Length: 166
Image (cartoon, rainbow, N blue to C red; front, side):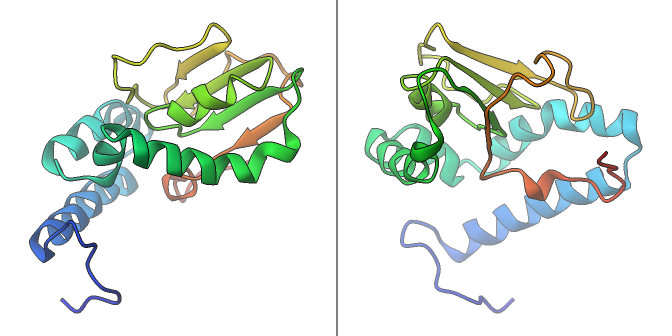
């Protein structure tokens, strides 16, 4: 297989190939699954991914304070101008939730919405932070018309081809 760009300095070809094959297999299972099967896959897919790809960049970042600060600084630059102390902020697919927890220092409330809990459980969440685990279909935990800002940088790849948005 020919690479379109150089390998990351900290990963071998075999590691990158393994990551690709694991993600491809999970994606194929999701695409071919019916709604009930997708709910079950959603609930466990990140556990499977991180178990099979121990060198996943999100795991490395989660365990490295400097990498986390750099990533959060970059994301914060995107949303800073939209934040007010009275804002209700939502992050879809927040991963380890550390960015959402950082935003919580600047707004009234933060909802982090994901299909599984991927936090480092030694992290202490601020009082104005809520993680909402949902089935990938129905989200009922946030009052209608209550959110000021929605952010995501890891979401679009999870949209299923049969999803209907109204």
